[in-house]
Image: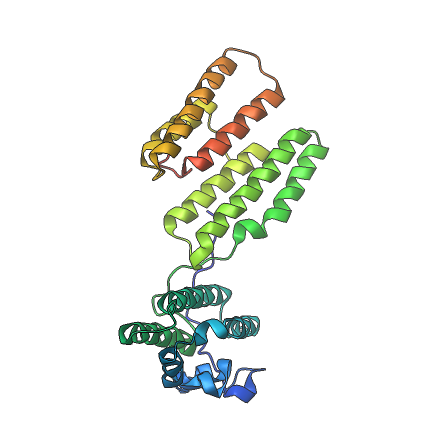
Length: 294
């Protein structure tokens, strides 16, 4: 099983007053207002000041987002925050900015909205004060994306040694790139759930099996087994009825094609075509390639 970074308790973040933006200083005992004063400047340091801007219909969090993210990047680079914590903090801040924008769409914030933003804002400043999230939730880096260059090198080697055709190599690279996009979607909140991690691992294993340069004992699924998995996934895919109907038509078309191919001696290109169509349909039908999928 591939390893993902687990959010650990980091050292306490140490932010000084505004003039010290170039480096971390101060101590765990600094108050929350001073932490955001270091990021945004004195006029944004105190919660009351920000609430005052909300009362005036302004959006201080959105206005200071770039400066906030730059500060987080600095803390990650210096090792004060882990990369996983930095990813999650920025994602949480982005969500807070979206909430601020929604609340302030009419250029006014109700008392309840200001209180809600203030509570969420305070919770986020506490994470920065502690240097970690209290729940120690699992977070992850873009491991699939990071491994893309190495995977493509393996594919190039297999093609040069004629263990794969150029068409097969191109398809493998394309499917890996698509998997990296799936990972990006999973990482939208800075974390990866256990089911998402299992799905990524299963899909990476399937790509490795197709590449054929590993010692995995597992054999690739047959086209018929993959079709059966698609058929089981469609009813619970969460897609609209219209989308399900369209995929059902494609599913039946591929079933006929697979049945015909199973009785014939098909070429490598024909087999690659069927594999590509199956992969596309699996993705659109939201088939998860975990242990319980087939």
